[in-house]
Each structure stands twice: as structure tokens, then as C-alpha cells.
Image (cartoon, rainbow, N blue to C red):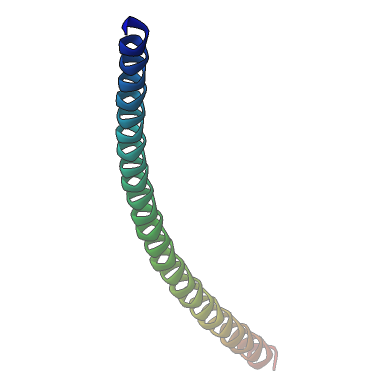
Length: 91
């Protein structure tokens, strides 16, 4: 009878340990899911931030190129005017 009681006690301990382990695993999974969701949200936010930055950079690059084109055009015009003026003075 005493052996049966010990076996039953061991069985109860095993059942409680399994239940506790299951609860720990469930809690760990919930925490892991929460961490993953937070990480995914941060990645999405950073991706959007980088996409916005890329658009700004592209617009700035376009503006710089347009400005350089205008400067080059002004320099070409000025150079031609100077050449014309020099030619006029030489006559």
C-alpha cells in the first residue's frame, strides 16, 4: 500500500510538472509572439521611413540636376556673350 501511495504521489508530481511546463511554454510563446509583432511593426515603420527618405533624396537629386543644367546654360550663354563682345571690341 505504501508503494502504491508513493507511485501515486510521483504520478501527481509528474502531472503537475507537465502542467507547469505547459504553462511556461504557453507564456513563452505569447511573449515571443509579442516580441515578433513589435519587431515587425518597427521594421515596417523603418521601411516606410526609408522609403520617404529615398523619395526626398530623389527629389533633391532632380532639383540639383535641374539647377546644374540651368547653371551650365547660363555659363554657356555668358561665354557666348563674352566671345561676341570680344569679337566686337576687336573690330
